[in-house]
Length: 75
Image (cartoon, rainbow, N blue to C red):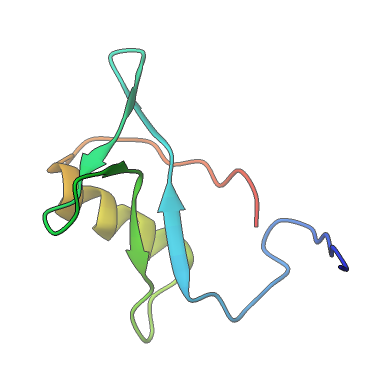
């Protein structure tokens, strides 16, 4: 197995975004409608959308959050 590392923002062909969110000093998880599990917010990056734009859209769609700060942590 080969593991590659890269600087933040180095990759250009992202498919998904994953958001690790905190609210009131607690980790926030979403309950999946079709599965009996909890998971982080996130989803597919739409054509023409940056990973950051997708993260903001997905966070709103899955949690209803309208005021938040997002800081990319890693690729």
